[in-house]
Length: 287
Length: 287
DNA sequence: GCCAAATATGAAAATAATTTAGATAAGAGG
DNA sequence: CCTCTTATCTAAATTATTTTCATATTTGGC
Image 1 (cartoon, rainbow over the protein chains, first blue to last red):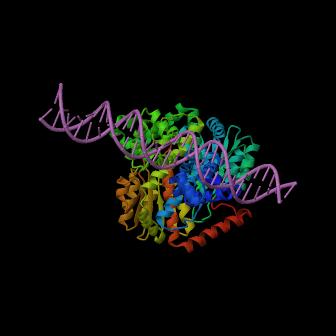
Image 2: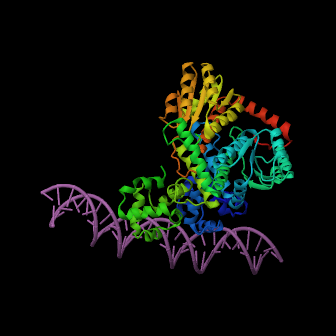
Image 3: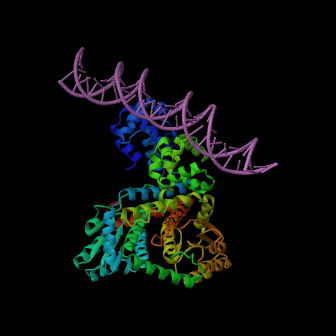
């Protein structure tokens, strides 16, 4: 957890002096991150030792350490904590979206369970057939993305975003098959049903979703993505960025399971593209 | 430009002592960001004043300021600059991907032309019909994403990833229509042809692509995304994150063009989803 | 190759920043 | 109202950083 979030959490337990310090940190980040301990103390109408103690209280070694922690949250906390900018100026909108996206990536990474991801990657790389499920704008993008990333590794994979097809595919699955599905809310009951059905026929199910949700409970393996959502209805879920990163990570880990095969397949695809399109080797894979 | 990038740029002009300092900064970020000036000086086998002068040379007021700048680059430069981590450990892979994604977002935002985006958003919001074009794994995702984000605003939009269809659609376009297409490499000559055709029939074309590329040259309006690509073939283009952010920004700006209509459409979709799915109002829009 | 000027670097001193220690004040519980 | 605990401050000690000045090194001209 980053330091600004911690400050917000513990705000109630702070003493008067500490509250004044916390206030400045939360409201005038730019000042705080550049201030010396004396300047910060003065502004909070507090003595420097109080600031030192405040830092220790937050598990920092000393003021310098505290400052570093603070500066590190640049993209993480900062504007996110006080969402005052409800501006519609293009510059502000861009900054808000980029900040939230970076934030989502940070929070996702912070809570990321690498061991579990590795387990899932191993399963994927050894599977018979992989079916990627997801519905709605966001999760269907993830399903297609899984397809797009995994087929390059020489894995057998297909994406399906249609509930009825999902049920039929689940019913027809074999024990070596994997059903990997995502649901941002965790409340896609159709997906949960497909998981249940797939498990009944002996296939393995993997959920990319909120932990402890309906979908999570229905799956064998869960890769949790738990992020708070903003409340401006115009702002699409920055959570997509976290899911996309998760897909990338899984694809990479799966590739490393059998690097030689993956390399061969990738080279082959690339060669095809280059030969077909133009002579330029700088052609990106799958533009 | 962030401080680590600046250090890398100016590396040649550094003196011996400065080079030793720079080396530590670039290779052991974690040490440097936590070190005092004396520790850093010792490690670089240099005197503290030399470190101070080094900081000034980089336009920092003093060592403290320098440390803050350094800590701020947490997500920006850091490991990206020295891609030494060719590790296949799950933890390292995850960190690498997340860092590169955040980096891509940062670099994109840094070069972002808000005014041009606003112009494009205005065009989109006033258009007759919007056609989103893109081919290959990445750009087709962007095309679908444009569809997914724009239809919610009450705009008439469709996505097309098939070259032949794209040509037919372009030929059938009317003057009020918009063709918006993406190409990560800028070398999708089919897309360029579709743009040319669309312009001949009087439609407006918008390219999300590398500046000065083939595709960029074929379009009326260009929203440039110029990012360096990593060289590990297993690592998919983190550029996708930048494109996704660009789509989000465009959709938001378009929404603000006519907020009342957009709000109404969004509410309507949300209501439908909630009524159809479950009673829970926390259902995310388009899961 | 030698010299002057410019530049780079370090040692020591000066300054500034931070922490510690001890003292005092404020508040809680009896 | 007193005692104990906690919070806070002042002042001293420590530590970190910067300035100053002396020395060394490099650069470019002859």
